[in-house]
Length: 230
Image (cartoon, rainbow, N blue to C red; front, top):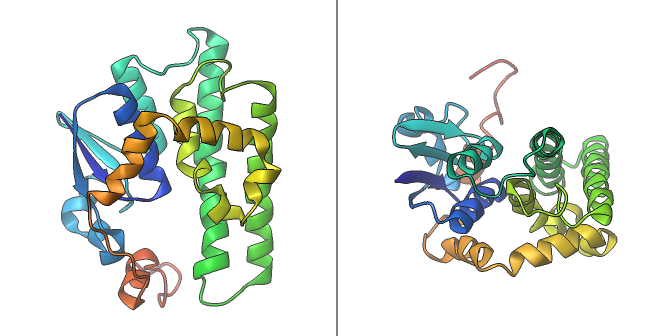
């Protein structure tokens, strides 16, 4: 049985989708990040980075959503890329692109537009530009093929879906109209029963929704600390 440390953010959504698609048995431990539960000693023993998601699979501990979906695909033998050297290379390349580009730039674009205590024009412009640049690369990729790795639905599409489902919140209303191929894939995955079950997890667990002062301290522990301080 896999223990899945979850909340309703984009990165845990990737793992939830894979688990629902694959049928691997799992149980959820909800981690309320706005209450700061990710900073507990118990949770940091699982993920020292104090982020969600993480899993424990019969004693095997794994964190980072992209590492988890790769691990689960290899464990289950499901939703893997074509069994060729190029197929695996493409899957790894695009998974790392999502991990190093799509997620971080999308997250920072949201942060500086919505949550930063002051509007810093340079930061807003930089992260908005980079988020759009990365999403346009994905859109161009999907203009040439149905899925991120050829004609097969793989764990890479699931990793992308975590953020693709919230592109409007990242880039603004109407963003998906400018990314029609991303929209096409997001709509296709959203219609899958597994995706609907993954989304429905939000209705099963009560998580804090207010971004009050306590939540800000939990989300942004750097605030009020000097450089290099823990």
